[in-house]
Figure 1: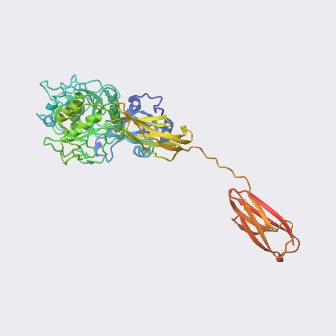
Figure 2 (figure 1 turned 90 degrees about the vertical axis):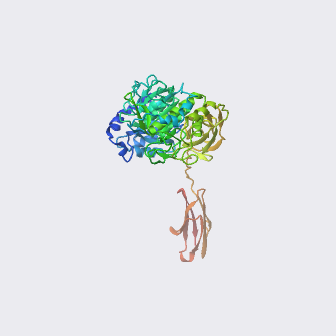
Figure 3 (figure 1 turned 180 degrees about the vertical axis):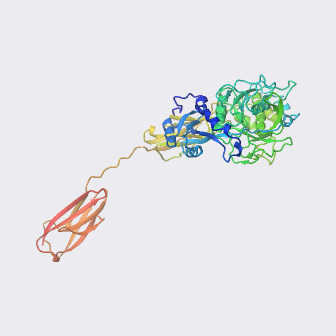
Length: 593
């Protein structure tokens, strides 16, 4: 199994892995960005990138890959297979990340980008919470009020002293400053929290979606409201490990592979992540993902707002304009943005989980989409996703769904499918399940190589660890209920042995078959020469009395010698052969005229 890539000087806690460079979050981050949205490229944490290696990649090979770029592995983000790599001052974060992302032994690499909250503040006061009626929340409350479910609010903190939030919070954590202070430093988080689980039916303030759900404040942003992908991912990891079943991210975090990886981790722990689709009003080319649910915004006319981002990443839509909620000042107000359509959806998910705690995250997501009110074109579209959330239908179906999963996952090794392998070799596996895949393991000749819990499932196999020859690869996938299945075996040939070249020191053979040695010649004489060698003849030459008469890259020759033109007496005939390794051999005979 792969050695866990955790630096000896750094504990697994994110405080060491990420907040080791918390100074850069202030010095090179939001504090210096008067108008981040006006920049051509989103700002990033100076000197740091986020890298996810394939399962099985050793610490040595990871370090070897980042060393040419001057990179140093600081540590990992909690339990995620994502590592913080520090770069030298002169390095380009985007360029180095792009180079590592093209390395087949890494799942992804990206700069630690700054991301804005999804709010569009609106100070106009609304005395009616139209959104609750639009999603038929009162009918949903007949089935569930959110009891027993904790919703993590990844934001700027929450005002725990607000009259409608008192007693609604469980302990959280501040990942921006690495402490337990989760007070709201911006106001955005308190507004988001009120949409999910403000105290309701108490004769004052506002009503929320999930009255009796608990809120977990996880601060991920600074006072300006901007957060980093690393703080969001760290917050998700912590929330998943500390009892949250739903996490709301009112930020456009779906474009980050690091955040997607953290969302998959939470899903593997039985939770779901809801995030804002964005407020650009423009198309977003990010591909669809099953790691989190991205929510667009609708208005009181049940149509998409002009400022809601659209694209394939949109899964659902929900009311997000003029949403009356709690404010950090202790009062109430109406706000707009996908920042608020997202927590509305998170509240509905909390109701569903409370109504039927045995449902898997993928089942919750499937019910949420299948019960949504279809708006726009028939079926899925890039503006409304699968439709506008309907709390009543979603909670009712969830409450009535009976869970019995005996179906194993499907799994196959997609690469390699055969052939010869050597060195550090990438192995790709595809796996799917009717509910969800919890992990995939790779075996070589029956021995476990590594385990991967986040899609796409990929491994780095060090083929030098086994003897050369035939090797059988098998992948096994598991679902959350313990069902498992193995792939068909793939047979490959491991070939790592260095072939030592055989040094040829044997000279060729060379012979003069005519005339015979010691014979007497006259007139025209045929001098027949032949040579041979295992590596081949490179050249053959013939000389008479030291004068070369023939030379060529052949193995034999027949030379016509006119002895009438030479003096009577003794003469010397010499043949020289050279093989392709440079070895030489000579044959000499003496004749007389």
